[in-house]
Amino acid sequence: MQVAPLTLVFVGFLFFPLLAIVVVSFWDYTAYTTVPTFVLTNYRDVLSSSVTYTTYVNTFKYAGFTWFFTLTIGFTVAYFLAFHVRTFIWQLVLFLICTVPFLTSNIIRMISWVPFLGRHGIFNSTLQAMGLISEPLEFLLFSDFAVVLAFVHLYTLFMAIPIFNSMMRIDRSLLAAAADCGASDGQVLRDVIIPLSKPGMAIGSIFVVTLVMGDFITVRLMSGGQSASVGLMMMNQIALLQYPAAAANAVILLIVTLLIVMAMVRIVDIRKEL
Amino acid sequence: MMDKGRRPRSFYVLGAFFGVFVLFLYGPLSAIILLSFQGPSGGLTFQMNDISTHWFTALFAQQRVRDFWGAFQRSLALATLVTLLTVVLLLLAGLAFRRRFRGATALFYLAVASLIVPSILISLGIGLMFNILGWETAWYSSALGGTSHLDATVRRAHHVRRFQPVQSLLRGGGV
Image 1 (cartoon, helix red, strand yellow):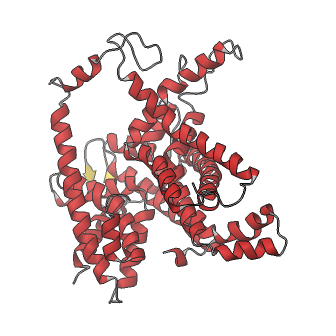
Image 2 (cartoon, rainbow over the protein chains, first blue to last red; image 1 turned 135 degrees about the vertical axis):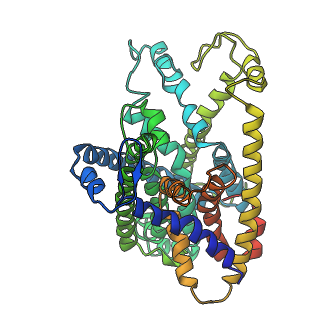
Image 3 (cartoon, one colour; image 1 turned 90 degrees about the horizontal axis):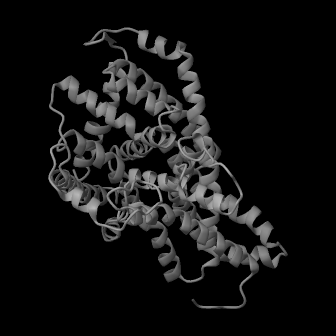
């Protein structure tokens, strides 16, 4: 009985919406109306269009780069906090410092890169003042670089927190034992810490990859409308009221995302973390 | 900080890395705060033409296209509702998950699924569902379902299972 409300919420706001997407993806549409029938044209349109493939390649590229950088940075930060900061209080303080920027909205944190990266932004003017470049660097803002930078900025903490959790569960006597057996710091890191924090890395990776795969606003803002992602493609279709097309796209995105997640779960067993 | 023994050099390297990371987090944010005091002729780039509160006055002034207080009140109301609902629902669920019950595994996987499904799909789905059923979409109905339950709620559902209900309540705010 106690779970009934939660179950209702899940059924009402997770299960049925997904069902609605699947149903609508088989509907037909014209310029003004949506017709409830059963057609496969939406899927045929999506799968036969070269735009779909370039968009997916683009999205995978974003997801891959973002995953790599968030994992590297997140792991290093978590490692520092878990093994080099010695008291709980300091760990907490440093973690809070990292968390505070996450209390503001995503969009504000994205926009705040604009004064940094723009043609006359801080970065360009600093480099010019130092005499390193004569012309402002154009690729900084409204480019793939800017998109990945924003993603890394937004999502590194989602990676760092699960990894930190995993690391805090590693029995400290294991590290001492390894060191006693003559393992160097590097060996301890490679053979003890990294294998044991894999579940955290997997959970963080799932968060980051699914967030990037479904994103549209970051890509739109930071690329200046010059590159597309799957989410953005769907948003454009929604704006044109082509709901069935967007739904077919959504079903494919859902399948792709689930496949990625399943692959990750295959590699690393995360169940003991849940 | 308590100091037991000398710190290895790696501590300082990693500490420096952490410092750069914090700068990376705060740098853009502090720039935007500074720029908000820009003079009337300035824009979103770093030439502080003047220091003023011009843009703040403009923000609070009632305008035809942009109604700051209306938007703010809606956000606040939505946030309050969502917080209340999540606390109540998750407290109940947390209590229930203390022992096994029928459908526990299914519900748990549903919770995990809600974390994995990209949020744009949920929004699209809820929009479509309301459309099909002929319900009116509004911030207090569809948006409530969308924003709250599937994003923040479930991440807390996680905690509930992991750390027992009472503790998770104490953890409260932070996702």
